[in-house]
Length: 551
Image 1 (cartoon, rainbow, N blue to C red):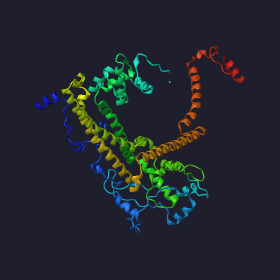
Image 2 (cartoon, one colour):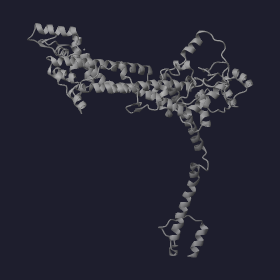
Image 3 (spheres, rainbow, N blue to C red):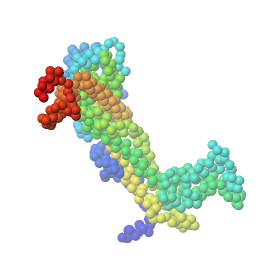
Image 4 (cartoon, helix red, strand yellow):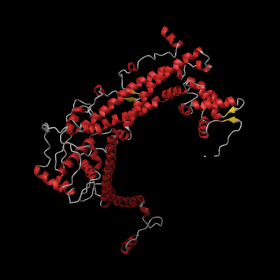
């Protein structure tokens, strides 16, 4: 209770002598508002990740030519569907080549990662191809086929500012409260009077020492004259001590949530993108199919390829039907994996991550950390200045800070922002490290990991998935049209269309005969004489004579 009473008596007292390093404590739970990063491992928190580890070893190897490296470990047995050496040599001269970057040897992962202990290429299923058809489609034929109103001056008012500066201030004042209401709202940081846009406008209106001196001199020379609206505003703002620091603190407290969101959301998109790609069965089927086709066309036994080549599948065309290689990949997947999806709908987070700039995300994080650190220093300076003014003749509103105002809650607000910033820093480090680990999982070398940007990688995969979906839909639509065309020309008897056409005419004839028969049965025997009300049918002359003889 005593501590609570002391906090009420001294609401603005804060331990500003606390060193900056003591604030940096490890984050407890990796959650930022509604975004959950708690599944990021502690091992991913290392400052030296897989993509940048062993840089010295690799650099020394690059500086001086080393002796021939030792033989790599024996690769796993290859599927029997691959071409024998004789066919391999023959294919080199008879089929088009895919100019990709081969992964001749896959470096094992340095440790257990979120994606497993092996690369994605080690777990791919072998794809059985129709090699004769591929050789026919992509037969090499000798040519390369792979590829302002008038301004009126107010006479009775004093104006010492330039016209441009005066117009800027006048336009800003049209959206602000009267100048006399600005000082108390700024001292208490009252968001009900000034919102975030108003604070931003005030930051552009901060007067300089030269402007204040000109206004004061003009007022001293003409004490009876009134100041113009722009000069009066600057003079009022100039009387507020530490105006720039107050506005910066206020803007940081209002902007932190949006600044945090600009950093956290791209990281969350990247995290989801890696999870969706790793879990996509269609993505693995595409990689296996393209790898098998490329190994056959190139006559090689590559273990994998750099995924940037996926964007070039639509540029490689066969030499007969001139269909792109992507078309043949889609046809193969529809035959071999009929349950596969269009890929694009499975990796929506990849598309979102491809639109982000992760170098800018890192820059924003560093800027946010610097702003938060500077805010503590500014708050410390303001508190010391206000303590001195309490002894002097300071204005009334300087001592009357409402208890529920943002100025009163600013120390706790900055402390809360620091806690969120620790989580944000840990999230950024772990997501980037996980992305580097994901590239190693895809078979990328450490050099390739360092040179690959997250946004470029995601954009490449997203563009490919969009092309794949479009090609797949075109193939399915063409097949559907062919089926409809064949069905309209000669409908099979077992199909609903053929059955309806076969049954429609007999049913109609039977219904007419049935009506006539029922009408005859309802007619009594006494009515056998000709009756004009009943329908008459034409008969032969012989039948008519027999009928008349009976009567």
